Amino acid sequence: MDRLAIMGPPTGTAWTVLGFARHHQARREAEVVAFVEELFALGTRCGYDPFMIAAQSAVETGIDGVGGGWLSRAWEDHLNPGGIGITHDGALSPTWANGADAARAMLVHHAAYLGSLPAALVPYVWLDPRYHKIAEAGMAGSVRV
Image (cartoon, rainbow, N blue to C red; front, top):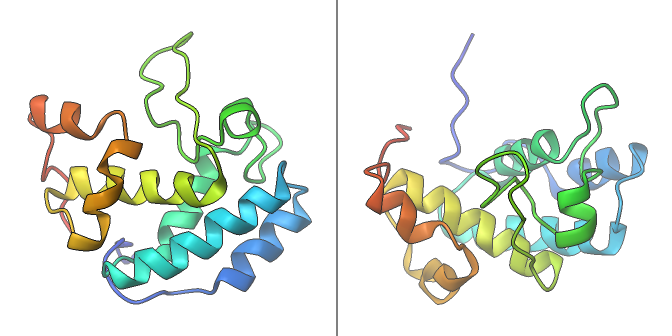
């Protein structure tokens, strides 16, 4: 089985992701649309495969036993696209103002683990409450592509 990477050109389309979200009755659909649109626009500019990052978000915001994506309480109540900042059971989720900011935070979060912050993401570092903590924990650059 080939290893899936988050770096590179899109391996799927925003239309496919949004079709999946609609099929599974994602919550806060307008914010899912904003999330996916920004993920594909900004993620592609940064050299990331936004389709793979959207797939990860769908998994992390799905509900065990139900599947789907963008169904979790963290997404519905906080627009948290991937459990960002939820480090243990009972931890409160950070909240994002809209789907576009959620996408920016998700991209910054990935950049932290990759250990390289593209210039296009610099204005959005503040959206990821864990960005600096990843480096402090020695995890920056821990993801290999």
